[in-house]
Length: 315
Image 1 (cartoon, rainbow, N blue to C red):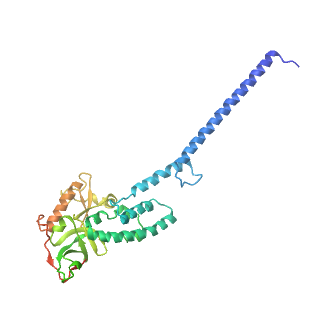
Image 2: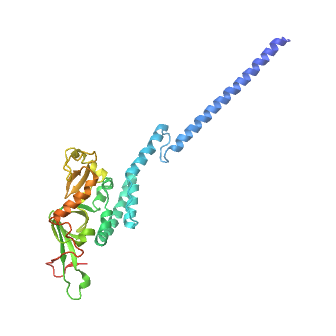
């Protein structure tokens, strides 16, 4: 049978259009699938390595910011390269950003050993460099993250009114190297410590009613040079409700008058100042009170009292 030439041409044109249309559809479909694959891969690479397989893209995007924020909030690096302190701080960062219960329990055992080592080193530092010992005290936001088993191995914060006595002892002949000729004790809330000082306190005589604060490991106390302890942001946050009714110890105005209430610890009592610029005046006021209104009475050589001990404090 012969086809009409016109019909033959029309049929041929239809076939060509069908082939071209199919090719375009296939190309677009392939491109769409390729694009979807790229997007899926991008989301997968953004997810943390520990993310479970099959996690939704939205969950993978939300997890990293939460983890990073937790690590940043709990970062702590004391200003020392001394191994006992530096190693403990690095361990803390790992512990604070670990959320698996089994791993955390394993890290706690390691942390207890490191805390013991740090405690021994801190005792020696209190004796030899009380200023640095105070500076290396564990901040409140770190304490709150640690388990009780490790908290109990840290230094104790001491704050209160008490006596800081300067004593002298005369060694028996031949035992001079065994006795410290001038030493100090601090008695706060009925407890007596071997006290170690720095700065202005090195030249001060005995103070019977001084505001004292510092850190203690056992019976050893590093006394801070300032009577006022400024609370860190995390610790201060727990007392903010009291700021509205508090009166600044320096200005006599509401502590919130400048919208900058500053929380401080004075002899174990939390007070508020209306600004950080009042911390120094409050320190000077308390120092003057302790020296009976004579803040310049300190000398290079402390005035000492005779000790009731015949051989003084053993080195």
